[in-house]
Length: 310
View 1: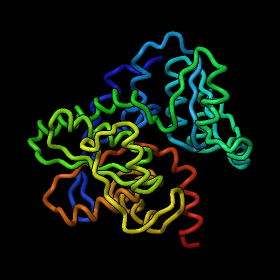
View 2 (view 1 turned 90 degrees about the vertical axis):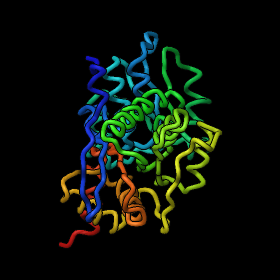
View 3 (view 1 turned 120 degrees about the horizontal axis):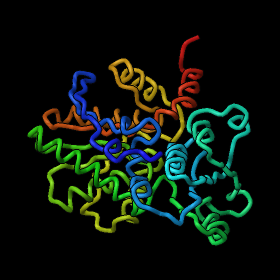
View 4 (view 1 turned 120 degrees about the vertical axis):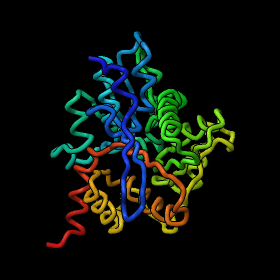
């Protein structure tokens, strides 16, 4: 059964005090129990359009990616089959499914390991484009993480909601903060405000790669750097997926303050946003809660094993 459109819009904005600073939270994690966060915004186009000829949805990425679960939910809502290709599928995960992988399986997803790097020297995306997609009909391909121009459709709706809220609350000079993987959501938010001459600035940080990688992602989707978000650099180099005590600590403190976040992207963003807020205490800041909490099922035990005292 399809989700009614009104359930995928107008998520609440919550006032949130943390470490003596005041923030606004755009609770996009509350969009829908299965189809929420930034992936739901990026995939909204595929939900709203007919695609009557499509029977198969094709995606790729990590076996624990938020996009895997969101694509599985999208496929279930549309009556499609999902084939999600991964380079590697750990044996322990197959034996004890958890998080996004387990939830996607429950929705009927088929997760296919291809060992593209090992066997062909290709990324999974390259392998799909060269060897799989040409053989398929009635299939819809979505690039990793929803990094495609179709994502602009749903992200623009999010930007409109934020602008309407700021006008209604008489808030000027709002800064939006969110972490970036491919940077697609941050880019299309910033592009909307630039295109419509709205005084809302998007701030983001590179979580998956470095700042240069993120700039390249922006440029691929929109060559005009005037509409790109502002990247807030981290003074410390962090490796994606590695466990850091400061990440665990701020996640615990945020949880104690009353809101649950995920452990992969949010901790770095909050550390950088707090530092920014200390330097600009008068600027109103909204943090976009992008969901992804299922990933905590696998991340949290890792943190507990490493840092919790016995």
